[in-house]
Image (cartoon, rainbow, N blue to C red; front, side, top):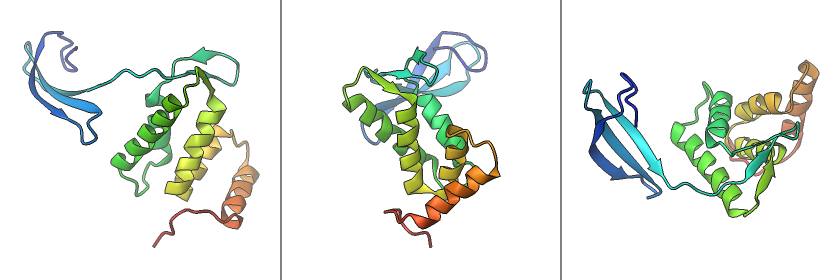
Length: 158
């Protein structure tokens, strides 16, 4: 494991703890060169499906891409990082449990939008605007009209 400060590869583990759900191990490490401490997380490498992109390319599933997309959509919204992480874990678990060898990016995006719709309307519209590649304001308006007119099982906001 490289030190994030100096890039040195020799370090020692100072502390290890299991995550709340027991699916991750948090390790505090100390670089033996510069003495900087940093945290790493260790998780089981799961067999996840290949992602089929819109242009037909295939690439490895990357939970970080889903996380960063959701984080971007939820920026400056009252949604905790823990909630976002839970959504990503749920989605990743579903994709793994499906047993499929390949999954389309369209299906992944649809599932992300469904989860965001449960969390926050604004985050949902932000994500949808990028995912569905809105070209103008009228597409935003149509999406918002759909949100307003369709009853959902979303929790009501105080």
